[in-house]
Image (tube, rainbow, N blue to C red; front, side, top):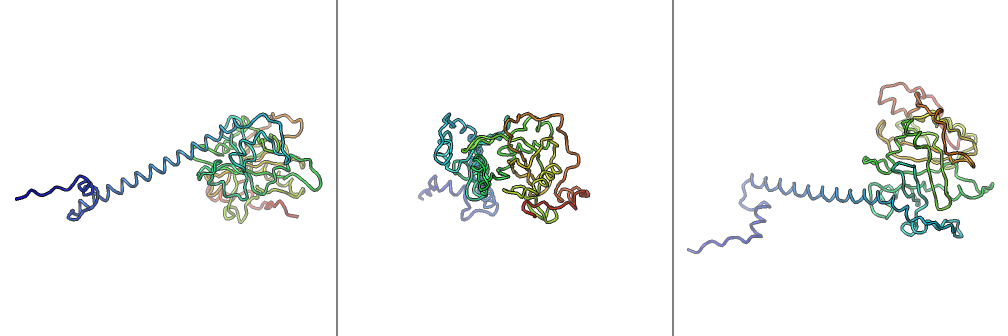
Length: 325
């Protein structure tokens, strides 16, 4: 009697790994569990490898500052040529944002919307880290040109960035809830293709991004222009809402820089906002540390009080509008 021919090695491997005719129910289940586990492991491996690459790419953007040259040349459009290497990598590069001794030390871009760079890095790749970007409505050049009645600087310039769990992008901004952190980092540097600038932080606060979290209202902190009569009212809002009483004054003639990131620690869809004003000519970067104190009566969105079952002492406050007559 002829000996039965054994299946080749490849077939035996297939039979061991995959459900096969004649397998018992238990054997089929074992193989399915094994296959699903392998698939999950592969998918997780790909996910974490991709996430690691995205994180590294974002972290590496800080090294791009070495590409800024010492050139004093300016082209016909007023663009400083020392940034030409960065603009060759990304034509939408518009400046470098830095808060000394923090992780906020990154290139800033601007495009035609406020969506693209939520999931796109400086190199143009998909990334959950995105890249800090300037509000598409802002005219950055206006901050550095001689002002006339026709051309006025934007009253408020806004930059957005993610708050990542690994403390990347704008996550460290939440440190401005603390007076000690503020005292150590009161200045923002924003060096742009049109000129260099420094800004003194005046307020840091929590705000809602959806109207349902504050009685049908969201503070429009990312306004671009503002009626002069309403600017004083906004200054008062900044003082009420700020975690820290900074002691830094704001004049009607000042322009503001606003940094915005997510903060879901207190309310869903919360935003943490840092507002600074441009240093005035001849003004020192130093702050009066003795004037800095904790704000013990902060104005929060209604959702904050609801979550903690507290009464809102500011519930009847007027709703600030930059364009309200």
